[in-house]
Structures are given as structure tokens and as C-alpha cells.
Image 1 (cartoon, rainbow, N blue to C red):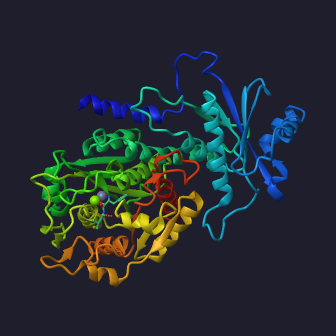
Image 2: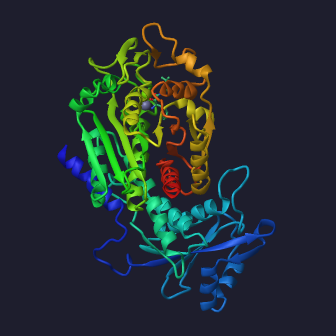
Image 3: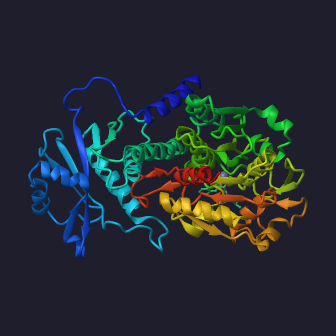
Length: 516
Ligand code: BES
Ligand code: MG
Ligand code: ZN
């Protein structure tokens, strides 16, 4: 086990190291360049070069423009082309289509189309060069260096730590006069999301509750001056009377951990903290209400809430955001065993409320109930929890957006504005009494962990259940089950666990930091 653990920690370090040393023969030292072009007119009939592309073209006396015209159809949005040998410093140049210039925020898509186009185009360009064994890539900032950096870092990520044959590593840097501060910020945003992707994608026998906590502790170690990490053991969880959390964890041989992170970016202690809470089920078998075996492997990512929340805090620390954040992650497995919860069992949460566990697969709300109770003890400015909570959320919105259930219009607005910037969208969902009535009607206890009409409105009854453990006027529950994984919907993420919505959480925290 120890060597497994060390392996995971090393993998995390490797993924996030931007510059690699080692033997540099001519082949693996090959340098590439990603350049953007905008398209106007019908089917991109006319094109416009970005500043960097125009400068490159001038240095080649207009040769690039000429090549673009004769080498094939116009480079419309999403299309790209590779040129060899046009410049002695860059053996491979990838030119990528950015679509229209200055499109801005779209009133129906609720994202910034230009930013999304840049992320997608730069990601595709970097991957194309990676496939051509280019080891170092300079990237055109395309007028928005943060989005370009996000596209590069997110696009190149691939979890292949456990494969013998790995994708060649690629390092990146901004080309010429790109906005370096924006670029650096984009790198940190992208790396934050990649940390969440790594934790979610890695198998459950590698990322146990203990290894998860150790990995986050290690990632936060450079910021020891403003971060404290508590890895609360089972004894502490018992002292806290977290009976709902313990009822889930006791079905597994792996010990639970309650991870508690304090990021103090704001020395003024009068600033009340933002509380981020994440569901940390490192594997969800369903317990005695066992899931079907087909697709069960995806439940290694059922700690996506904990992963995105903790990765956001790592990123907030790296960005030195002037804000105080407390992160809480109840971590355990949901397994069937002789000690596991049985349908009909009644458990008692930290606030004294009793819960009838009619379905042991509705375990996320049980562990979050106790974490939410504990979150209130920190006098929070706001509580935001993230959880891969219900399959019903995926049925409702698919992977288009995270569902947000909130009692606060202010919190909704802040999360929404943040998501328009990041392109990792949120969409508001209802918290009607209608749903509350369906979870407060229980034969044996105060609450039932499944709604009375189990299949109808499953994401909404789950949110109504969580609300029974909230008194804060500013609380939001993010159901991220639908955005947990990516097939090909988000063009700048390869297939696999998505790490969404880490960048939206970071942007939200950054906005909050600016307000205080
Ligand atoms: N972790 C699952 C939800 C999930 C499903 C996340 C698919 C990502 C993809 C959760 O613990 C669960 O099993 N929920 C049940 C609740 C039901 C028993 C009321 C579900 O959604 O089926
Ligand atoms: Mg479950
Ligand atoms: Zn689950």
C-alpha cells in the first residue's frame, strides 16, 4: 500500500511540473508554435490574423498568409492546420481557427463565446503538436492569454500515470507579447481543474480516503504560511456525533477521514470565511442497495465534490486570493458488508435529526448532512457544497451545466456570473416545499433519505434533504453528477473525468475576494 501511495503522490507532482529536465536530443527538444486566425464572412471566406500571427507573417514576408490561402479550405472555427519548416525556431506551426472576433457573452448560451473558442482552438493546436512529438509549445495569447493558457493546460491533460506507454509530455509558454499575468492565471486555473481530474480519474484502490487527504496536504504544503490542514480520524468523527457519515463509512474496511482545510488569504480576522463542502465518496458501490455492475467503475469519481472543492482551495492559495476559505470533505467508501447500513436503518445526524435510510445508495446526502452541520460552526459568510449527488441531475441537464439549488439570490448571481466567465456553466434549480414534503414523510424517523416518489424529481428531493441541515441564509448546493465526466461535449477536455466546475469555484472565490 505504501508504494501505491508514493506512486500517486509522485504522479501528482509530475503532472503539475511545467518544466522537465532530462536528456534533450534534437527530436524531443522540438519546438512548436500555436497561432490563431479569426474568420469573418460566409463560411469563413475572409480571415483576419491575430496580432501574433500577423507579426509572424510579416517576419516571413507574408508567406503564412499565402500558405493559408493555398493549403485548403478556410480555417473556420474548430479547424486547424499544421505547417512544417516555415520558421527556423519553430519546426512545426499549428494555425487554429478562432471563429469570429469580438463575439463576447452570448445571451442564450450564457458564456463568453470568444473565450470558449480560444480555449477550444488552443487546446486542439497543442494536442496536434503533441501528436507530432513536439515537446515545447509557444502559444499565441489570441487577445485573451488566460483563456489560451486554460486551453493549453486543459487540452494537454491526460491521465496515463498507470500506463507503460505515456503521451509525450509537453511544456508551454506564451508567445511574444502575450499578457503574461493573464497567462499565469490561466495556467493556475487549468492546473486546478487538472488536479481535480487526476483525483477523480485515478482508481479507487489508489485514491482511498487516506491517500486523497495526503495528496491534498502535499499539494498545499508550499503555502504552509497561510494554510492549515486537519485530517480528522474516525475518533474525531465519533466525538463530533456525525452518525450519518459514520453509518456510511462503517460498511468499508477503509478508514474514513474528515478533511478540514483552512486557507487564510485575508489577515483581517473580521472577514468571515467562505465554506466549501465536498462529497468525498472515493467509491460508491451503492452499499446493500448495490448498483448494477455495468458502469460502476465510474463511481471512483464519486469524490468529485471533494476533488473540485479541495482543488479550488489549492488554486486560491496559489493565486494568493485575499479571502478566507474553509474546505470540508467527508471522505469514505460506500460498500456492502456485514457492518453496512441496511435499508430501513435509522441513523442520527450531528444536529440530532434522525434519518431512515431506505436506500443505502443515497449515501452522499448522509455524509453531507453532518458536514453541513459542522460547516455552520465557523460563522460562514456563505456555504457552497458540491456533490456528484444524483443520477437524476444528469437526466435533467446532462453535462451542459452544474445544477445549483440555493436559498440566496445573491449567491446564485455570483456563481452564475463566475460561470459565464469560465464557460463551465451553472443553472438554477428549485428548492420548493413540494420536494421537502417528500423527504420529511418517514415511517420511522424525522427524514427519509429517499423521496416518497423515488424516481420523480430525484435531484430536487436530494437538495430538499440537504436543506434540512442548513440554517445559513447563503447556501448553495451544486449537483455535479451530470458534469462529472466528459465524452466529447467540452472540446478542450479529453475523454474522462472532467474536474468540473473547479474553475467556476475559483472564479467565484476570486470575485468574492474582490468584494470584501
Ligand atoms: N453517486 C451517486 C449519483 C451519481 C450517479 C453520480 C451517476 C454520478 C453519476 C449517488 O450516490 C446515488 O447513487 N444516487 C442515487 C440516489 C437514489 C438512490 C435516490 C441515484 O441517483 O440513483
Ligand atoms: Mg450512491
Ligand atoms: Zn454517491
